[in-house]
Length: 334
Image 1: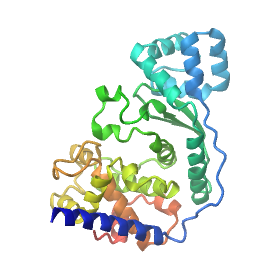
Image 2 (image 1 turned 120 degrees about the vertical axis):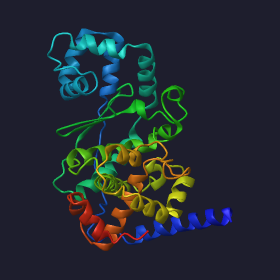
Image 3 (image 1 turned 90 degrees about the horizontal axis):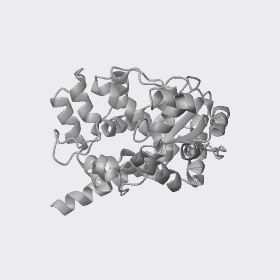
């Protein structure tokens, strides 16, 4: 019986995937061209300065990367403007800590060549631009945060911390992260996190962060759009799940939804309860087999149902601020 259940779950997952591909709303634009994306290597330039402490490089950094210095200082080091005396000294002190320095060097080595990521971003941002014509394509950078601020975004600027994508077997990760966290810390997810970070920057969450429905719909919209932009990334990868966990969710979708409704968690404005559904930690409060971030996964299913029922553009979807209205129009029936 267990074998049959697993097989049914896998077949159901396949059927849903095929159905989703075949029923894409006609208002979604699929571009034929890509955009030329070049990732600017702030991470390399800063490492050179950290290693040499050549004061001449300070001026080069200020000239080439003024915005990155600004948001790195504020977002990672709680420092003010680079113009403040002692800014670069504190920068050197922070990144010279031995463990962080080794991590920094490993990250730059691992990401010496990023042409594959630039190619993915070229396709991904071309998709976003086709569906959000007024959206500005950001200048893309890389930085190292020391497991701190993963995404840095400002006007027309987006940077990702590459030390968070060293692969789930990277030795240092064993001391700092759980298995369910490390599965997301892999190179195939770099481009996806760039796109998600920019969408969240351009369309920040405006609902009630303590209400599960509001959060799950917003997160589900982001996953839905990123998956369309980068279809080569499997839904399981995008969720940070193993394939067997994704198949389990598909096979138990109705039970999961009914449990949320029966426990009256969907609308209860309780931050602690809501966070349990969106945390990477396995949702064992629902069942021993429920993976983490199940709220986002269900939100993605609701959004997919909404887009099948309503032939709207992605811009209209992204601007939908009423989660209850979206749920009603989705006619969601797991």
